[in-house]
Amino acid sequence: MTGHHKDTSLPRRRALLVAGGTVAAGGLALAGYQTAFADAESGADSSTESGTDSGTAAGASASADSTAGACMTLMTSVTEGPYYLDGALVRKDITEGKSGVPLTLRLTVVDATDGCTPVAGAAVEIWHCDAWGYYSGYTTANPGGSAPAESEDGSTANDGAYLRGYQIANANGVVKFETIFPGWYTPRTCHIHLKVHTGGQKEDGSYEGGKVNHTGQLFLPDDVAEEIFALEPYARHTGSYTVLADDMVYDGGGASSGLLTLKAVHRADPSKGYKGSLVLGVDPDAENTGAGGGGGGGGTGGTPPGDAPTGAPPSDAPTASASS
Image (cartoon, rainbow, N blue to C red; front, side, top):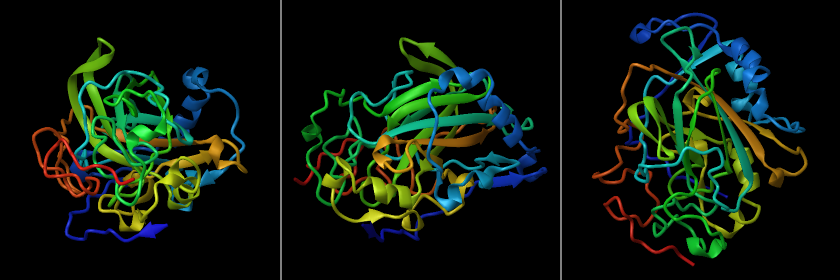
């Protein structure tokens, strides 16, 4: 269930994974953070956890060992893609009834310029496609292959709001989202978009003001994606899925490039869901426009980059109909 869609003409941007020491690049001095993060998980944020995991980490390159004793710094942003929308709500559960395998995301924002200390109050914004490759607000864009029309999933989700939202980091820099495992669209691998904001505040249910410190993407291991895409409702979208090695944005750097560590909720039943985690290092004083590299620019007023779903015309409002 894989295809080859790699575009070698597009620039690759890598982050750095710095272990057990410091790095002078860009004037950043980085120290180990994993121990502090482990303590935080059993500390102030423990009230957000419920139940126990019976699964194990999925994907060798996304194992916990990849971040042991390390501070991860996302040095360079990548494209925000063509399907960003302003005004997402501050909320933990972003599913709005969309069907799919449950995914709990736990992301920790740290200050890469200050020994990887937690960035309390940072706002993390995420958005991603549904089980068939559709984004809210752009549901006429063809996800490639053969997929039912977005409206056929039977949900009552708000077309302009599902699978989008903000969470504001607690004292340990931790945010948590309840969502579903994303589907896929041609020519991209399975991914989740994100922005990290600081300096703003919650207003009228959304996040206003401040600045964007980082624009990036989170990636999910191929072995887990392949297993999930064989389940309903994902299985109703058929065609060629792009693996990580052939993706135009992911550069093979593992956790330092946004690859999530995943743990199955139930080892023998992937339909029960997964928990994903990652540490995001940012510079709270930096400002990022969101254009980035690795797939081109995007956003309001521009031409969608190469990561736009198949059939999307050169505008920010795709009109191509999905195949049935």
